[in-house]
Image: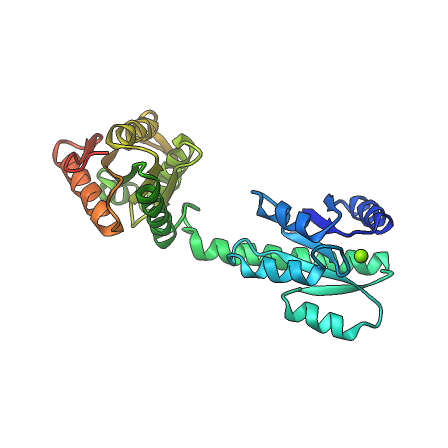
Length: 297
Ligand SMILES: [Mg+2]
């Protein structure tokens, strides 16, 4: 786990760096609070932060407040470093959003123990977030999480005047799979289909389990034609090889409905259009991609 350390004292920085590295932590060290905030604004920034209280420009408590003012996710666990006996500072720090504190000069064993607590809490937090946003069978985003992605992308597409495509897809004759091979095989098919869909997407696309055997793909910066290309690639990834469940190689196909826009603000409106296209794909014989051409993009 990566730890960000902000401390204006070179000796303290060195000591922390050596201690943390020897305990197996990857470290990122900065000399003041403003720099710490800049680091935390970057992607994949550390979630575990040690902040010195006394620093020029922006002190530890100000940094705490700034961190806690941001979006709730990702959660950042903050340990404040403070001088011994400054109880008011400690209270103020905890009030400002620090999760824990250590008094200087710190005891190495205590620091390590406190870091382990932080790590444990961050891991628990991650588990909770994952339980709330992931579908337990396929590990894809669940319905509410993928709808939230679509909502955000729609807002962005209207603001930036770039299109976004919604692709609704559904396993063909899935009831037949369940009836013929049983529900365990059905679950295995869903898991493998989900894995293939994820593996075939571009990095900035998202996919979620929308309902039983229905999935929703959100493809930013895609008009109708781009969305159809994405869907076609997904279709091939599913139909290209049978899915092995214990004892059976099951041939599976999916139908796809694509709708793209850069001026619709309502999630439901775009979904309805993608759904209509999916219905058309089913009606036209399944294992195919249909585009809703009512809207351009
Ligand atoms: Mg200091």
